Amino acid sequence: MTRHPIREGVGRDLRGAWGFARAVPRRGSWARETAIQALKAGMAAVLAWFVAAHLLHLPQPYLAPWAALCMVRPTVRWSVLTGLRQVAAVALGVVVAVAATALMPGKELALAVCVPVAFLVSYWPRLDDQGQYVPFTALFMIAVDSVEEPFVLFRLVETALGAAIGMGVNLLVAPPIRVLTVDARARRDADGAAGLMRELAGRLRAGEADAGDESWSARVRRLEEHLSGTEGALQHARDGLRLNPRRSEAGIRNAVERAGRALEVNRRVVRAARALAEVLDDVRRDDTPDPSLDPGFRRDCAEMLETAADACERRVAALLGPEDEAEGPDLSAALDALEHRVDPTGGDLPTTEAQSALVMAVRRLVLAVGSG
Image (cartoon, one colour):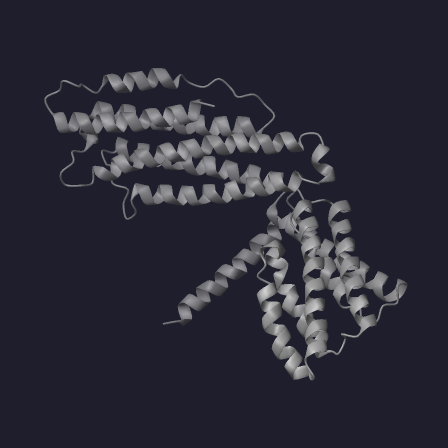
């Protein structure tokens, strides 16, 4: 029973690795930026080892390349913060190791004291993810008997040296900015929302409101999950501008702001799509009439959704690209025509109410595409 899931998991991993390798040549892709960061980490580690071992002649300078490669982070600001935190973490680890060795008569007792203390110190919020190096440093120094004065000084010098070299490499060699990654994600979000609207239109035109095996709301939730990932990528891109020497390059800051505006449009569209999905999911219940019973209303509603889908893709493309948005069809006129098909004084009150709810959701969608 477990063979098939394992095989499928391995297959997904292999396909992911192949997709990563194919994406590396694409300029601005996440794979390319990650590959560049990997090469920079190797460069920083080698440079730190060379300086520590061959120029400064430090004995066993293992912390220098370690600290250097840890500094090559996805943003320059994060790299600087990581460097300061790691130097502080190593210094605290050294202090704990020296104190434990001075207070305890043997190595075993010193380890028994230093490990719990260093472990607790590692949870200091100021150290963030670098807190793990407090117990690592303390444990390693006691284990290799390097708590005497010269070794303590060497470890601190190595850490500061490695952190400085790592930050320098990340700052000066292709400083990371992942603007195009956000651009691509925003386009995919718009395509996903437009695809859902077209599918909704197709179902309505066919006289159906059922989404099949999966509810419309579930499909919207997937769009919302993708949108959350794009929001994180945008925040990452904005953080990448801080302390980055490339932030003054023509178009970079403007591209980030354009991506932010495109993300806001996608956010409003997906929020409106959720309201529309909830209305259509409601008609699946036995006690709710199907608004698709009126062929004319069904046709006009489907055309409205398809027009809104085209407008969504066009607007996001215009926000992300250098060109101005082309003039599109008049969504408000089409919406007015759709609203006129709902008769508030009709004899079938439940159907009228259901159609009114659907029109309100479509109106919200139109406003989401056209506002801002």
